[in-house]
Length: 106
Length: 117
Image 1 (spheres, rainbow over the protein chains, first blue to last red):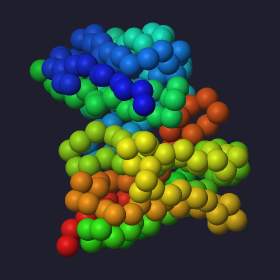
Image 2 (image 1 turned 90 degrees about the vertical axis):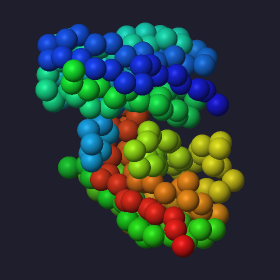
Image 3 (image 1 turned 120 degrees about the horizontal axis):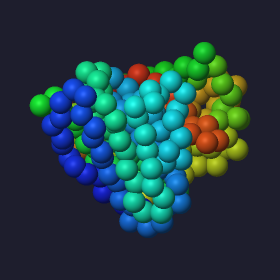
Image 4 (image 1 turned 60 degrees about the vertical axis):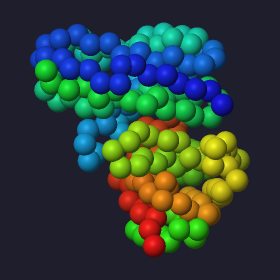
């Protein structure tokens, strides 16, 4: 099974900051990486798929990049509603989620 | 609009079998796949099983021996059975839709399952 290592586990940042999360797959997954946002008590929301394609409705301050084994997810200018937990998901061979990154207000 | 809704028992005794139903609307199970994903309290997401638009199935290798996923297209329902439940299976169980390009683009609200005697 493909393993996915997500980092950091947690991150403190301020409004307006630029933050980047990363996920590394244990083998080449082409561009089959997606990113989700989950707020407490809510359902995960798909933000990005195919590593860099924004899901309809995802604000343009969110972006994704990468291919092969290394992927990144960036929020360019943090807004108050962005503080949440983010998960990556590989979809190349079945599915594996990363462990999540909790983004907190500094 | 696209909707998914999970249903099932809130409490299951250890060693028993869990049966969950995902009822969908706004799309056809013969055009989209559906997966089950779970999340233990305070922890991350874990993909459990999928049934694809053509009816084939896939399972998380760590859970495969305990799982069965099926569907009833006439009722727009996807069924998940998990046997030999343990306390570690206590979690929120979600069903989610998969399109041809985007995994898990729509989710149900989830059903909380507690394994306890």
